[in-house]
Length: 98
Image (cartoon, rainbow, N blue to C red):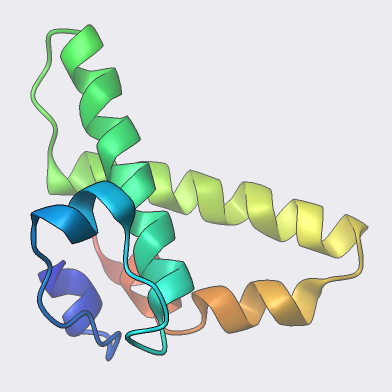
């Protein structure tokens, strides 16, 4: 989550219940944080099914793919503003992190 903090996404503290249930209305960016948490859990699960270790670089690549898919869907449904509002703080991290 440090790469999110580096991009001004206020994460706050995350305890076990936040990992399981997510964060709700506690911070402004809770939609993005919950999406990243769910995506991260799924990425870890997928890597374990492949008997492979998850990496931050691999997770960022996968998150980039999710971002691009959601961007395509938002354009088709004419909901680009909602998409950009959700992802605005993490776009730099997705573009420049390797």
